[in-house]
Structure formats: structure tokens, C-alpha cells
Image 1 (cartoon, protein in one colour):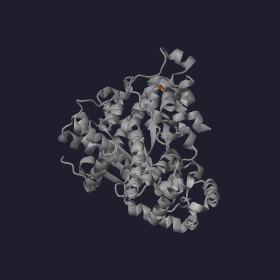
Image 2: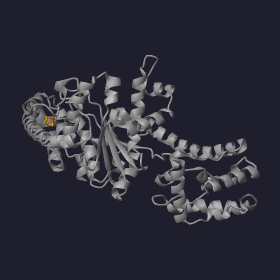
Image 3: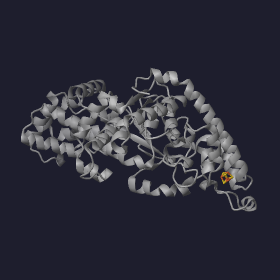
Image 4: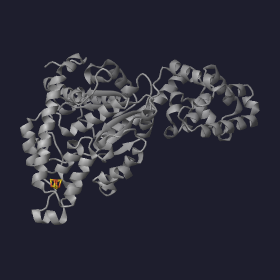
Length: 499
Ligand code: SF4
């Protein structure tokens, strides 16, 4: 119950984000919180407030199954305490067992923001040092630069074949003046998001601010399309007749991407659609159906029971039984194939594996995302890299950090008397945010105490800011010491940095 009371925004102020939930289908993080093992304090405190399809990731972490986390940093300035949220999110997922990836979006910084390569090198170094200082394990995880990652570039190229200009125009407002490198940086970013799944599909989370959601949605779309690409590759080897092609297309249309779960991903192919399609729904004649099935069969793509590791077994079994029933009714067509439906699960899995290898496709799982709140700037408004007083850089002199907190706007009342009477407005106070997002660390009790004392009128802004300013100074001192210590680690990281 403490966790709930601690959330200073509660469901009421999540209403600022209501539009995201209603219009874009982002879900409230609270709804998955229970499934998350050892939730991070940013999750417990509602700083991470939303998600898209995070359940598969939470489940994988819980069951020690493969999962991944990836986020990118555009090195356009100093890393600041807003970026620290993302560093923390990556590191936490890594500590929970996920494969962790952090990348330097140098192509994007160059093409979309016009940064020179020298500036990019310098900032990239600073981001990486802070990430390592906060606990990223470079031996377990992977750090890369977009421009240096050949596999990433190849993947971007293939993804580019699945996206077109009108689409990028609609999402990013590109127009006739947009340069091609900028567009290329978008497909590179899509490749980043899918990169952790290059070797094998796995639940992957991308921690971002809500403004990045369009990227996530496009990446999810492309993941689907690449899956279809995979299937169509397989067809190419069948040499289907036009009639048969129509029938396969018909099966295709029946594949409802939204309904796929982790299992079906690996062995998605027409065979599954065959399995799920009531025969009476098909417009094909018996001969065409029979020949398609024969070709599927020859290619080792018999209708099989979907792998059942995660899925709802009963639902699968019911579908399967229904199929068998349907087959019984259509023996004329299926006579030669009934046996194929009854292969056992181990055999089916083996087949699914072969199909995957044979088709050489990707089978990406649509990536998941979690969304964190933006920190309010210390001067009010949004925290912005371009307004130094609005944020605290992780490289700020600890004394400057202290001074910036002392000078911050608060949610305090006009007079101390009024504050004692009505309490402060912690919900609107950038200083309280510092406590909740950073200064309390893992100590929920402390964050809660600050909140309660503030709204209860026992805490006055002067003292409160003094305490926060001191904690900030300590945090910066420690962080910068750690940065010095991890210099060596950075030297071992296989990334080209000029400085
Ligand atoms: Fe903000 Fe602290 Fe003042 Fe409350 S007492 S409004 S938390 S500075």
C-alpha cells in the first residue's frame, strides 16, 4: 500500500497523459507492475507511467527466459539527470537478466541535428562514461555506435525496403527538402530497435520518453512486415501457380498479427493460418487447396501444433481439435494429409526450427516499450539541454549543482505561514521531483516522508531545498568519481572514439 501512497501523481495526474492512453494505445504501467520482479523505484513511484506490450518482457524476466533492453543516445550535449532515468532503466533490466544494449546515435546526431563528428565523439564519450559509472556491465552488455555497426547497417537497408517515403512523411513530417541521410538515420533507428533480435527473436523493451512513441510504433509495424517478408521468401521457393498464390494470399490475410504470441512468432507461416481457417471460409476449389497443402507439405511446412511454451495451451488444443474435426468432414481433400496433422510436438518444434533456418528470415517479435515522465525543468517548464539552468548535467561541478537546486522553482506557498496551513504543492514541485526521481535512490520511505511532510505543511521550501542541494552535490561528487574510475573500462569497450 505504501507504494501506492508514494506515487505523488496517482491516477488523477496521470490524466495529463490520458491522451496517450486513449489515442495511442499506451497502457498504464501500474497494470503490469505486479508482474515485474523487483520493480525499480522509478516503476514503483510512477515515474515510469506507461508501456506498450511490456508483459512479454516482464514474463521473460520472471521466468529467466531471454529478454533484451535497448536504448540509444543522441550525443548532442552533456548527459543530464533526465538521461540518467534511461541509463537506470537499461542497467536495471540488465541486472534482472536481460541482454542490454546501449548505442550512440551518431548518424542521427549528424544528419538530424547537424553535429560535427568531433562534437559527437566528445559527447559520446561522456554518455558512455556516465552509463558505465552508473553500473552498466560492458562485458555482459553491448555498446555500439550506429556508424560502426555493419550488421546494423545491413538490417537498416533491409528495413528500408519495407518502408516508403509517404509513411515517413506522415510520421516525421518529412518533405521535399528533407535530405536522404536524415531518412537513412530513421531506418537506422528502426534497425537499432530490432537489433537485439537479430540472432533470435526475444521480448525486447525500449525505454523512452513518450515523444519517442512514433519510432516504437513504426518499429513494431516493420517487425510485422519483416515477418511477412520471411514467409514470402519461403513461398518464393514453392513456385506457386496463380490460383495457388491467391489461396496463399487468402491464408495470409487471415493471419491477425495482433493475435500472435511469443510462440507462434517462431513458426509463423501459412500452415498456421491453414490450421485456423474454417474450411467453409475458403473460396478455393478442392484441387487448389490440395496442391497448396502438398507443396507446403513438401517444404516441411505442414500444419503443426504451434509451440506451446508460453501460450494458452487449451486455446491451442481447442483450435487443433476443431481442425481435426473439420478435416474429418473434408476427407476428400485432406485424405493424404491427416497424418501430417498428427505429428507430435517435438517433431513439430524440429520442423519449425528447420523452417526458420530454411527461410533465412527474421521472425522479429514486435518490440515493447516503457515510457517515463519528463522531468520538469528547475526553472519550471520542460527540462532542456539547451537551457543550462533548467537541468543538472552529470558533468556539472558539484557546487554548481548545489546552486542550481538552491535557485530552483518550488511548489511552495507565498509565505511560510500559508505553507504551514495549506501544505506545499509537491506534485507541482521540481525539487520534489529531484527527490522522487533521483535523490531518494531506492529509499521509498524517504521519498514518501518528503512528500508527506511537504503536503502536510511540516516542510518548508528553504530547508527542503538545502537538503536537496546537498544531496545533489554528493550525488555529483560520487558520480564523477566513479566516472574517473571507469575510464579504464571505457578503454576496453570496442568503440572508436577520437578524443
Ligand atoms: Fe517543493 Fe520541498 Fe517546497 Fe515541498 S517543501 S514545495 S517539496 S521545495
